[in-house]
Image (cartoon, rainbow, N blue to C red; front, top):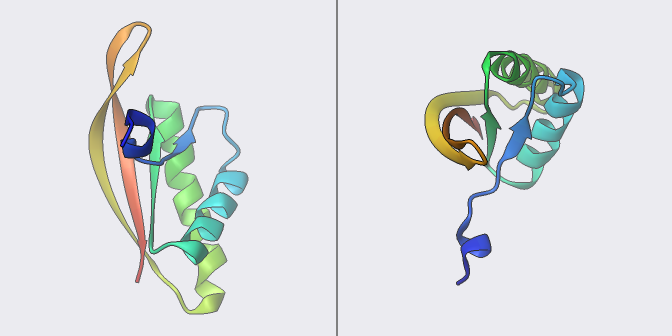
Length: 93
């Protein structure tokens, strides 16, 4: 297995991400899999991610679903070295 296949899949959220669009992407991903992960670097990106999770909860509620969110940390390699990211693991209940 090469490194790309072993790499986890994330929805990446930036400060400029549209919370409605990310919320919709979360909801659609959860219809296909029981869990999705968001990765955000920086306070503004984390803000957009949290808003997107709340929006996604509203999208899945009419189907009788509720979401659980577990925040955590990850280290991301960038051109400037290692940086910390917040990872939100979102599951359907």
